[in-house]
Image 1 (cartoon, rainbow, N blue to C red):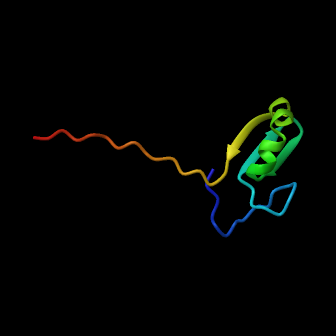
Image 2: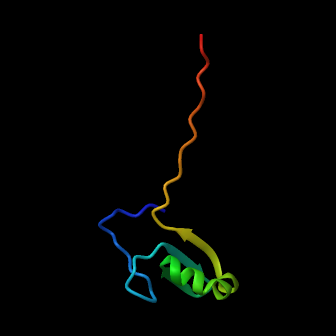
Length: 67
C-alpha cells in the first residue's frame, strides 16, 4: 500500500511515522518499526494481515528478443 507523502500516519504507540498497518480481529493499528518489533508475539496471535506502508515493489520487465 503506497501512501502519498502528505498523508503522514502516526504510530499508535508513539509519535513516530507508522511503517505498518496491522489488521486484527477487532480493528486496525498503525505501528512504527520499533513497536512492531516490540509487540511481535502479541501481533502474531491477534493479526490476520500486516501491510508494510510505503513499500515500493519493482515491476518485472519482460525481456525483449533481439532480432
